[in-house]
Image (cartoon, rainbow, N blue to C red; front, top):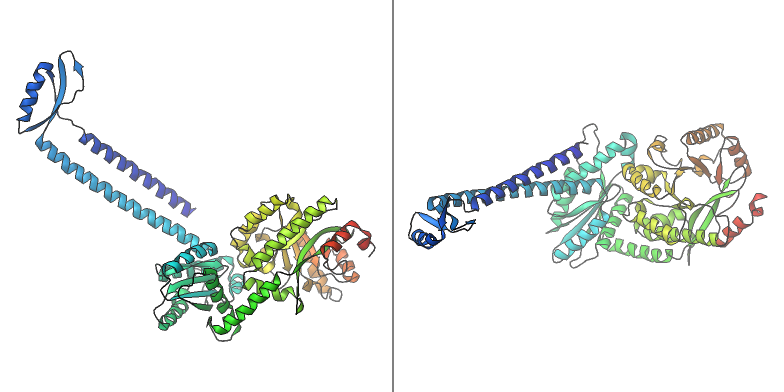
Length: 536
């Protein structure tokens, strides 16, 4: 509200200034008009009077036919002394107008600078940085440049211990410091979550040491009003080859170095070198093979009626030489190389295709859930792409469900919640996946805009043996119901677990007890022939 009020006052003050300018210009125009001693003259004396005026050194005669009344012509003339005065007044008015315009211009620049800066530290700027970076590389192709990519160590713990407000304040404080020390020195911004990028000029290797020292002593020195938080960062650096114009490649190299720094104890930074270059080459080869993966569908069942009520689209990668590779391996790999964006969009389109195909074949169509990673959620055009696919295949939004993990949903709550709200506005339901893994946060359920809660398999592992587990799962199910959320129990593997879940009011289950993930043909057959699972 404070920002909005300041903005209104800013607009009002500018309107007043513009009115003042208009009045000054009007006043100048009035003085500019040839007002003098008015008189009237007979037509026959006009020539005589003109001759007299020409020889008069004290007046400048200006004949202005304002009105003709019979034999009379109205005319006016000015004193020379008045002309000098008017000239001085006009110069003063002109200087005042110029001064006001300069002041307004400065205010506008300051205001717009604050707005763009506010945008820089409150919102992810990856796409903008790609555009700015390409121009920066082009303008400085003969300069020595360095890309610095860093993130906040254990940022999730800051959010969990101090709250999301404190986490946001940490990000804002770091962004303010970057702006303070790197303004006009290069390009910079937040590219995702708690990850920042800086690209700047260097003259020697010593400059790299100075930049690292600046980051460690000044940039991450956060000053929060209500919290005393110590921040550490992992830093990746990439020296830019002269003439290099691939900004995405540069950011990716620096990002890979940052990730590598996290793997080495007592090392706060890593520089992208030949060894990492070869490692990246292998990742690119794996990425190329990754596009040969296939999509499977694992049904979800009503625990009481055994009806199929939905399915989850799962990607499976069968490598030509390494065999079946676990998603736990290739999904992080795809996220590192940002190839996950292409995979996610391929999965969404394939899901839309199968839904449309099922509709055309007259099958009982059920909603299909698609997993989105953190990297995908930070893509600016994600919502537009989802909407485009729905329109392209004429899919009812109720037949698509988006799943995000608990960690993803709660790590950058403000931003992720806004993005999920935008997706929900299309008519799509949102599910929180893997609830119960890591540091589960029940209070987060009221803050995130979800429709479905999926309990992770880890919560059910000992449900047959441990009464406490049953009580805990039952409590979560009841809480979920009170919050008007549908609950799905994942990883249900045997009928004993099914019976226990029935008794504690579970509604929907997903797991090998009813069906493993199926290829499209087998999935369609299962929907068509209910006896394949009703008799289990």
